[in-house]
Image 1 (cartoon, rainbow, N blue to C red):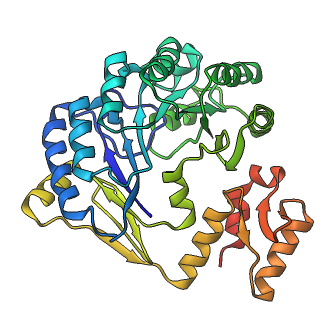
Image 2: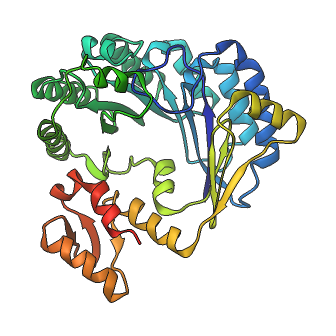
Length: 361
């Protein structure tokens, strides 16, 4: 199988924590869509495999008209697609919009809720309200969507444990099938990081952040969700097929400005510049950068991606690598499963990035 990711970089308002490639130049949406269609026509058969998953991400795909969503999906061709995901800002949701994107071929939604507390949404620069988020889920369900994911964030400035518990309960009460949840990251150059550095934010301490994560894992487990990736939880059968392809080495094509592709041992990416992308596609001179992964790169990626998942990785074959794993197992940070795979423990998940860095060669 193979997948296609389509990057829609437009945002009506840039969130204060976001460092993804995005733009508020909404007046350029029409020419961008036309350019996407040209790139899709040239590249959709690159993998020589059926396209099983499609993911429209951003940015904010829901800033596009539903008619443009249909044009993009028609250009890709969904005859073999099992999962077609679209990211949605709750502020863009209407009953009509949700019905029309479903009719266009979208069968899975990823709704960027982040919090059900209006003061926290305002603090991080989100443009929707808690009510709009709840309405978006209800309207999606009314439109016939039965595969809905929401994003929730924890360790937000001033956020309390009780507020976090309430957010999780509200999410569960909505009857959704998937939750992606991330601790707030202060990325270099973002507005929120600048606010933190000037002392104008109340930053959550590491112990509280770990407590929030542990509660999330336990509460969702008790609610019947499987913790299949460090930040992703799904009811049985509702794991994200597209995102799982990133973690297991499935080839995928990235369409749009800043989008990445992966095939075999080749990784490539489009420029994260609107002008360079549009002019490059239209003139046939797009400069797509690429790199060939070495055996070392592939090993390190297997460690980095595999340990994020509930399946983990197979045991290393060399004595040197085994010794590193054994040390972490003895320290309670990794463990062996019954089928002889290595996975992170709950304690290990708290410092997973450090563990991965320690195991890389």
